Length: 270
Ligand code: 0L1
Ligand code: MG
Image 1: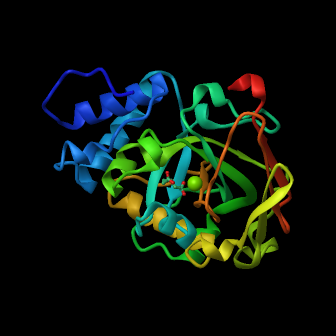
Image 2: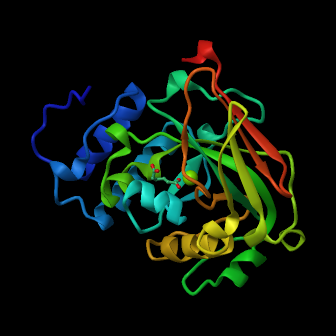
Image 3: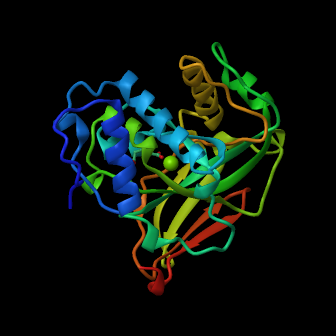
């Protein structure tokens, strides 16, 4: 299915209109860059910011930031070798134990993530991984449900940036550790789909250490006039490739020190 917008001219407002319509209407579309080569990275981030301004105007609250394509596994799968950032709002939080709302999504996939909760503001430029970790209050094992508004998750970098980095839902497990209490580069995770192990990795897959991803977020947001705020959540990017969520699927992510977090999809939710 495609959008119903009959406009032939492309601009920032149309990019946002079409992506917002696809998300609300639960349909996927072709990459916008195929019709609008003028969608470059700078314009794509403007579109992403405008998409979130509209969500905030509609009553949502910004709760943090996500990074995407921070691991080689994800970059290889998507054919894009550059990390990106997106925004998280309160409407994207999946409470512990809640089933994934398949009926609200297009073609969701789930991936394991190291999640940071910030105890203080963090503003680039010039943030190093060591400096970034000083701003972290707690570390969690979690997951992200991504749901590209593009058909078959096929897009160029500006497309996925404008689409808020495929953000859809996220959740975290019951364990909260202080940053000094866990060696994140050695933190292992094992992904099980319906009891079968489908992927394993350590969090070093994320830029060598998830703190590098946090620093990257602070520095790239600074270039656009934004800072990370105390109390915000930062998803540092999928550690392994993402797995599709179908009706009845149960995905469990087991971390070596950060506990287990499970995502289920009820058959009736489809
Ligand atoms: O896989 C994708 O849709 C690319 C953007 C998000 C990736 C991620 O969250 O790691
Ligand atoms: Mg992710």
